[in-house]
Length: 537
Image (cartoon, rainbow, N blue to C red):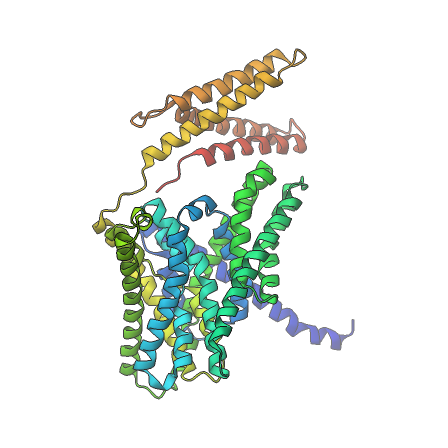
């Protein structure tokens, strides 16, 4: 390569190195702030937004601008998929009416309420742009809701409704946004909106189910966990992109595919593949969902620079921001309470499924917005009236609802909602485990042949009988059931076993291949024991 060519390559190399440095710095700041927030009891999302906002004004820090396609096509699909595969499909089906009302009805109500209110407060924005803004702020954010509500001791049904609402309402909001944008740039036929919503719904569900079915068939034939995990990383995009190209909802396709595969996972994946997929997606989800909040904060200086040229003064904008945030919060409370009242006085079916007023208050208080809102507002076309001001208002909504989320623990405590029944859940777990062990014993008796080693059969029988009996006789008030004692003592034994293997490695008495195989076996059992431990509330 000539000297001239080498000189031309230098800027490209510098750009690549600089990009890598920024990515590594992004990860380090995200992990550090999240870890410190957890130690001192702060909300990690709010802390990350605050840190990002402060850093955005540091001299030398490049101005961050939100690229909506990067967020919608690059970040949103894996985030939704990571949440969907861990969401029980049976719980969603059991509460499908509540989830549908919130993910479709509440979004439509919010678009209308916020749209008309903003048009009245800011006539220069125009009705179409006001409705577009209503669609931007309508959906709650799956990342934000899970990050904040997931830490609270809410009843399981409430958590399921909130997480499922935030997974599914993006599709409704994006259809409303597309219709509003079309109304900004051209004359819109209302029937086109209905048709677009129908296509988005059918296309999203169809592509999601098709991807789930095909991937399930492929997974049945995969033997190597690394191949299964590699396929898993591509699934969100395999569902999202075709659905978008066909006019369907990519968001809905990803969610449907994730729910389908999560339900089918025990039937089509090996245990090792399921564990690997779970760990990998937990890591991806942690990095993306927390980096998203840092990203929101880093965009602050750019958003403020855009609104600086507005014809409205500081106090006018501040008052408008507070009013829009208040209207958004009140709209959610009004819709949820009106729906609750309808369920209470409606037909027998609705009365049997009605929420209590404390539950309605908890659901109303969890209207947290996040990266979807911030990305969607940048989809507004250049000719949108007051576009920069609308971007600032969307940022205020995101930060304001995140701060509102800080009040959730106090609200939940004051409502005295019953927390998850840990005793019942523990008893159900032990009863189910006892049933499983009994089935295993029955299969052992059926499969045993005279040629099988009696010592091996006896060992299997003793282990299964112990676990079955320990689970069956576990009682709620027992300080340490036999099953828990088994886990504690076995973990202590595993620690000693690992130390012995490492000591043998240090002394050079075995080949490295043997050492690694034994360590992998020990790690597998330790992982299985760790996954059986109760999760902290």
